[in-house]
Length: 471
Ligand SMILES: [Ca+2]
Ligand SMILES: [Ca+2]
Ligand SMILES: [Ca+2]
Image 1 (cartoon, rainbow, N blue to C red):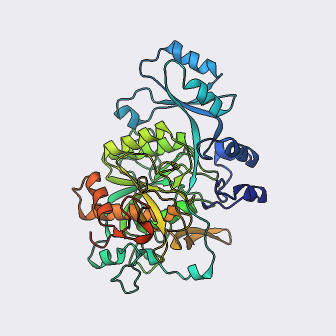
Image 2 (image 1 turned 90 degrees about the horizontal axis):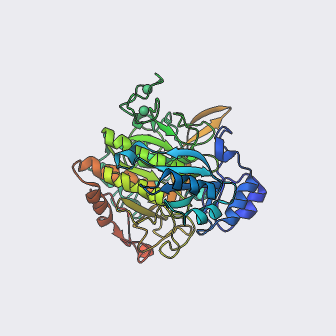
Image 3 (image 1 turned 45 degrees about the horizontal axis):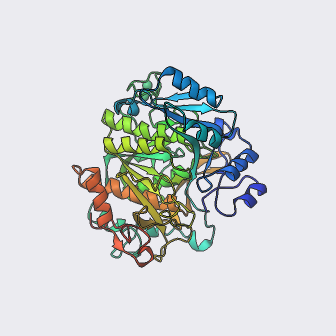
């Protein structure tokens, strides 16, 4: 099950079976998606194709063929009585030679019907639903057995507190490998608490942007994007005090400050985070996911040393526009670390995205438990999942509210959402030691250093679990 603090009992009954929908309270300013009632959301899910993937009910993303005439485009829109909601042409698309981008349409009929019609029309390269993605955290175990603060995922065979199924980070630290402040990672998720006591020293900023002057100094299309960008609300506010726990938890596993006598330690003690916030209270859409992926691609092309994005989310069906965005990230030299998902299923047989896209820069991650077993919720797949990593009973940073004040806290979550940032941290750690490595070399290093694990045998490409001890 995904981590979704369910809003209503109605939703709970609906969600048994794993198509999770809601996330916990954010402020109600997270516009478009949140305007949808729970009934509408449920209806979407009921009507969805693609293995229960959810999508915005009356929206379609269309890409026209490069040479499509204005008449052909207009006819295509008229066929489904579409209105143009947004033309999406990112800097990364232009850099890749695409000056047309994709168009987000509002249609008066169901999205799937409109997609079916538009696909066949002259001048249309593809049409697809505007999928809704949700986080891949599992429900949070409140079981006291798991709330003892044990950071098992970081331990190794040779650490003082031993856990052979941890990612062996303690062994890397003992060799003096603790990451680098020159290495950036993008967190494509909710936002995160950049003021958190165990994260603030590792907060990255866009070096090309001057804060607060109302000017897009680096010309990336986003004004004053200092800590990243909020694609949900279209502004630079990437932390919302009543939400963003999932994104903050992910950040802590990648790179909570180690050795500071506070809280937890990430795989990297030193790293730089940037936020591509596209998940809000009710998840995020394809339209915003591609903008978030392209955001980091453009920053990399500007010279920001981004080596990977962490993608602890999923739920949509196949999207050509998202796959293309991941391809642009690959061309820019950014790995895309993806959660395998939490439906307990074989994603070679029933594809799950974005983990199952064939792009070379994807590393897809299953969740294991502290006894080495595959977590019961974790997806798997000998082709579409690459390795396992700690994803059950994982302690990390979160914002907490005390007497109306938001302060730094810690909590235990489970999910492939939690396994994924162990791998993103491993990528950043490896890169900090081998700064000339290509992303193909880094991926190969991560996969080839895994430790064979019986619970993962035949369940993922490597048949093994994350091991950073040999970097
Ligand atoms: Ca900017
Ligand atoms: Ca500025
Ligand atoms: Ca710490």
